[in-house]
Length: 543
Image 1: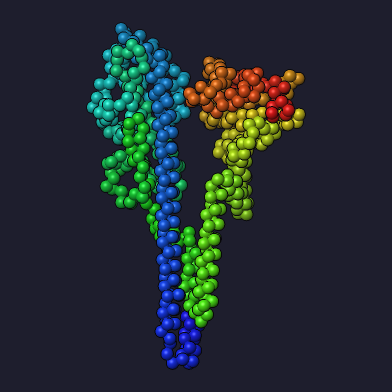
Image 2: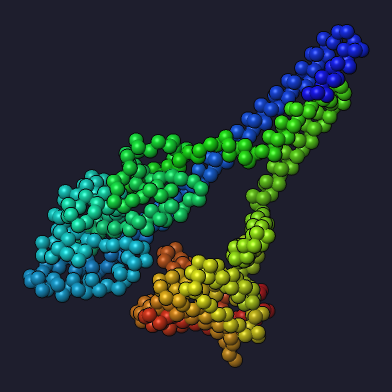
């Protein structure tokens, strides 16, 4: 501004009156464009900030919906298996003449290992209610008359649906038991063709575990699940299982985004709370551009003495900005369709972690990049065993980051086998199964061994874990599923990863691959895949 005053002072010394046309030109060519440009940029910043916030809200709501649906799916799966079990249906439909007869049959029901495994995996408890007058209340089997006055049962009956999801606040009158929040999945058991009794299956989902999953679903954003009156769980904490559900009128923070979540006819609202200080967020994001604007506004009038050159420079600047914007938009489009943009971002994070001395984080990011690159670069379905083992090593290193000292592993591949070709992501699928179904459920440390060697006729792949192990019947059923892997099996669900890997191995070997499972409860499991060598040499399998 001092330079501007000096300029005007010199003009007055040479001319007693400032020409009116120069004043008009100054206003039209400098002041007005500056104001308009500032308004345009500020509008762009605000619009971009709102768009980014809206997008983050949508992603947050989608994450909550995914986690919510996943948990309810687990409960629905338990209910479906209970309903379709002929053994359980016959137990519930039988009229017992003596209490001792009922107790003998109940003992068989209570020792159903399959049901125990399902409930333990999903952190759930099972209750069945029936109007069979010969059953004895207790041990998870009760008369429907016990729940006729319960709010959740009335809500279920009023829904007219075969299944529903209910958040329920249990006001137990016992002085020992504190009131607790509950999440129930309720379904009718109408599978039995000759069923004469009304039966209801209730899956009590552990509310504490559920609220923890909801909190882990979001990072940096807060929200809650509700109906039209109450909030049932908050993603930011404050989920005391002894407190009543929060009335919506008590929540003072405004909601920035809402989407509905519908499951089995039950409707809930997923609400994302509006972030505080969105203006500060926008300033923080665009502070370099705002700084440039301030500098331009302060210094631009200095160049008024060279008005013609300034106007021309402004036009050139506008053209350059337009070109730069188009280039930025083009790069953004390229980034959306080019998966290697993700790899570059991961590499940046890894280098940043190295510079900060966070070696463990850097290593985990590197292993994640390996896994993502393997998934993205699927040019051919077959890969060398050496490359597949790189992927297995990256996966297990990530699992070690998760399990810590609970997981150790060893990979042993004969040198002569490293160039042999197999369908990609097959060995790692069996390794993942060993982690999830072997190591994850075991509290003590466990090992995973991956061995690849050859015999005169075959290539042999062994995946061994020292995890929970499975019984002979379950092992036989899993082997049968592996041997009979088909497209229809994939559509049916279940362990689709294993089915997918076995199906591709069968296709690659024209059905000549062989599977073997050895397992012992509490000791571990070994899966052996045997492939005739004629199907794994580079020339035969690559074409």
